[in-house]
Length: 361
Image: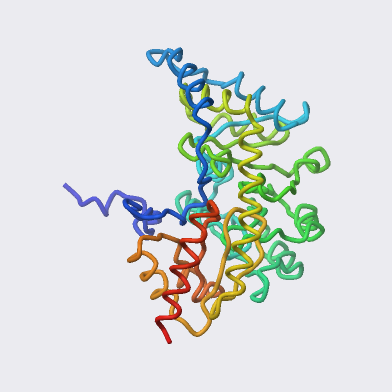
């Protein structure tokens, strides 16, 4: 019998699996999760809803009630079709599969969301990363349009705000990218709840535009619910790849329930935005730290004259887990990313960070 390596796709053999570190016993500030739970009265009402879910039956394959609730609560226009995914990652994978050919290229600004490149590799399609401005991680118009002209990408991903840098790209440059793109452009608005900016209004203007969002960052990370918005000409084709029953019954009913109480999620997002402002101020006033403004629920910062690996290890040893980005991209040397949490947890993080920096001296 021939070895596993003989049969596995060479593109898969050359990859490394996406690593999710254990957070047991740690203050978890690495994954951009909403730190707030629902009020107890709301939790009890939710549990009553779940008791009535017939888990012996398959879920609604189209999740029609959930889509209608999304459309109403989030003011999605009638001309826009909705497709649901098991998190945004599944939607990215579906789109990548639908357009995949070995002679095609996918493109995204970098540093950006790592799954764009990773999933491109899994479908055996070329990938082109276009470097952002090293000073402020802004999108460079000339670089993007030149790469589009040269590579003629079938698919372009743009995270808005960008992950892991947290900034919103210049809207006019993004519109130029959409206009010049020969293929599909997907605007990934995973952090829309904290940014107050969107490209959904342009879905009727461009035939090659889709907008993707998730409820994970709004407090439903455990449900894994992403949604894709666009014209039916695109989504009808993508639906052919979506696996049946990909959104389970408990997720559907839970999302329908909390969307009926959307003011709770909106209030939590507002609290996170207030905490983000204060955390950015504290980081900016910390010796040896350069922080970048963020429109998301996390903040990217660089250690100046300090070893980011040592800072990361020191935080973890003292019970705080953040994201170490050092070595992941040339523009992210000595960079770390911290999730914006509650006022109390942010204070714990800042105090420990400053203690570690003091120990250098």
